[in-house]
Image (cartoon, rainbow, N blue to C red):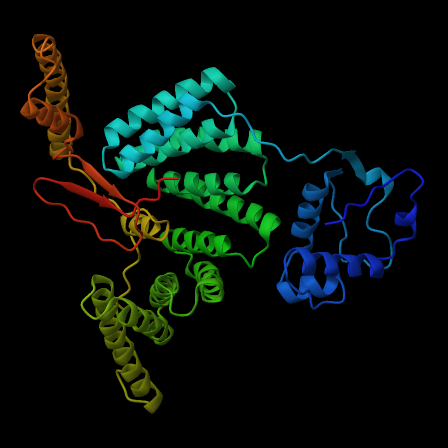
Length: 459
């Protein structure tokens, strides 16, 4: 690369035209990224790639370090200038730098994440809490890493069934992310979506819907509507609207989610199949069994090709197809009788079962990558009892190893069996604990000696 030195006497920029500037942009993109922009201007880019003008303006301001006045800009206008000198509020340098990191807190946070992935939720929760205390002492009350701790603590409480605590921690994460990262940062959008899920789990449906609308508005400002994250948000909004029986609005968001999933993940993706199933369920709630049958056929074909006929999801889709087919046949027969003018022909009662809040919450967990089993109060008490027994065993094991090491100080040859017992006491997993696996396509199992929680997106 050849660097260009600019000086006060260099006034070439004043004679720059939109055409010459666009030529330089095309050359820079081709030279640096190896990508060819086959457009004759910014208007062509916006049309070809489906970008939003507001999102493009925001990205340019962030990249070049320009702060503009907060007002409504007529970006589509071609007859008059969009910006004036008074619109430029500030110009600030953009500097590449590495933020200092609290080493001890980062170590606790990483260890807590590893413990959680191993299924040791209690130890992971304690390590994350300790990391939060250290971060507060090092950085103060506001910092992005503190927001990450709040987010993880909220997720852990949600997994363990403490929905109220999860919502409380997530509210702090949202407020802190807004303050330190900005209202339109991608992390802030994710925090809003998580808070909406926790509000829905606490039966605050209206608040959850408003938060999801807020997350969608911010995502459109940042990325535009053609973004895979918008597909996930639209799926969430569609499900929540199903819970309040607003099926027409729900169908609008879910169909948009199907289009985005096909575009970014392919027509054979499991995410696309799941969205097809949600669309079919919405059509059936509206009484449109023919459209529901068509959408469910698409979902069944994907599940059958990707997972096989014996998979649980394939069987559920097959049962749904059979039910929809039966309902569609009955309705069509009665409609034909009415058209023929036969007497005493009335439409049969349509078997429409509106989705329950519990069922909608389970589906929300699935599409957001959270699959877990609820622990009953008896199992929870047994889990706490096992934990209280496990801790004294570790302490007694440590005391025993210390005594043995003192007795064998002269020979300095401790027993191999004692070493093995000490290692097993420290590394032994909790039998009645919770095992966590980060895998969206895995299934849940609940045996007598183990509660397995799979498919948990922890961060």
